[in-house]
Length: 375
Image 1 (cartoon, rainbow, N blue to C red):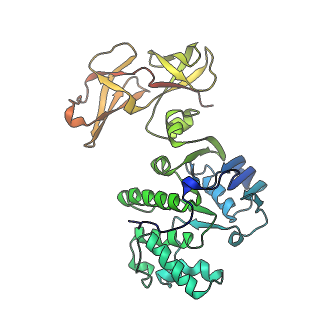
Image 2: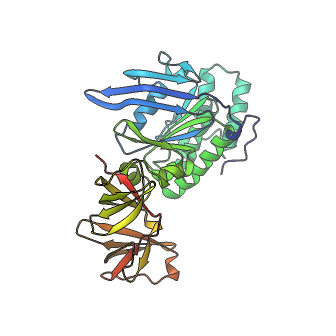
């Protein structure tokens, strides 16, 4: 575990206010004839932990590399603390990167790896020793300065990479899917340690991942990306509970998305005739009108199983039951093209249905959300 930090630097909750630590305006990057990032605007607040989340090829890593200076945008401006860094090389941008593959020098000791950036900055040897020891202590590797990276586990190597990044005290810390090579238990442990360290140091951080759980657990805000553009930028809770469109709803969290048509629209809710033939009352996202095609979002944990159909319910046949101990997932086939997943917490206290059983899914008021059909 990361040791309790001993620092006089401001924690994130006391970070500077006003302005943006990182500003992107009209960023465009093409590879050949394909646009990897297109007309992207983004502001990262001082001390914020912001995650770029999206599927492979959405432009998140390209965006991160342009902030770092490893790639040059074809159009637009990048500002760090208000300074245009378009002409500055990576080593003059006051950023540090934590890479997916650790990028440690195998012939160097751990202490030499962590102190590499300080040596390049020609810091005094005594200062390097102190700062390297402090950085390793912060990531729980105190006393391992003389070991080689080959003598460490994958999790320890990633901690060394993190120590190497924070030891130079960057204004902006960049993470390029740093946990993707680790096993699940270690990922869960390190994601909390990284967030704890970032909060204590108050370093503005941009984290790239395709893992929605990492984004939801670690972020102050999430930018969900698709095809080089930001689909939604908001807090994790808002992204999850109030997705802007069907893409965001389907990418973040477990989702049932059922096609339908609005038949009546009120101020906050609308009536939707689902493709299954069922009519439901749903909260509406964006501006909808009667006759609009929509996708109705039903989160599995918001639904309830019942033996028989009732008002605001959908009937079907059980085609799968997955019991994971603390949670079970029951899958019902509604039509040939529509299946619904329902989460059952603490299944040991419930009587789960069997394969082939007829059952109904109750949709509590407020559980359904109507989203504009994805074009």
